[in-house]
Image (cartoon, rainbow, N blue to C red):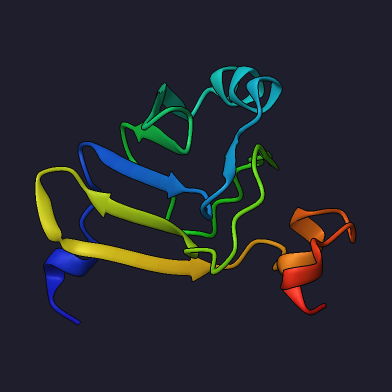
Length: 119
């Protein structure tokens, strides 16, 4: 691996985007603000994204406790993602996608579907 792969970032950013219909839980944001390695926590896009700023990231795994909750039911949900990158060098990044709990049409109408639904 090139030497640059081992260099410690001077500023790293973790962008957590929740699946569609989910937002960050306020208590989760408050807990993140107490973690010493996290320098700043911001919510974006009506609380559907969290941005965590780090002066540097450890060379080992980092576990960040984040909780979101379903604000609205969404069919054909767009997955969430976690993107971690060096703020000054966007080529040093990793992205992981994840799904929320999938629902079907009958979950939205609480199984009281109108006759034209056919369910």
